[in-house]
Length: 140
Image (tube, rainbow, N blue to C red; front, side, top):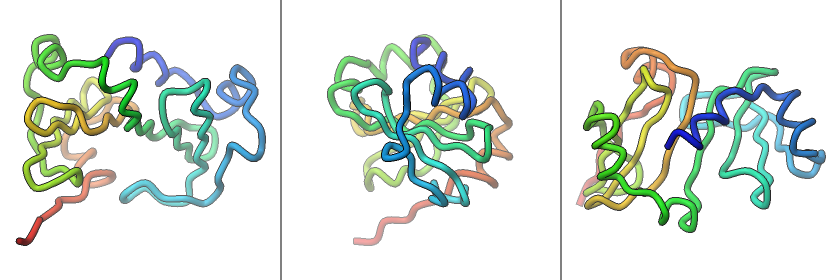
């Protein structure tokens, strides 16, 4: 997890320069759940996921690549960081989102398998819930 959290140190300009991002690897005016009007950078051969920016400021990294996530253990994350704040996950009815907003990340897991990881600037649980997370209700 620590390796992924290092990516929080990039702003838009430094990421573009460091990884040689081309215009074709940037989508403008996109959304991520409640966050809107963002630029999204996607360069799968060099970056672990989708990077979302509000202007020059990194607001979210979304990682769902099965190959990268397959090498990670949710049990190890729980051992290192605790269980986190359990919220509903859009990954599925039996999935839970374990948020660690003070550490700047959230992990969705289903029966111990990681569905996706969100990495963002450290914040409070209330701020994460109001600005980013959207409760999900699954109906049979």
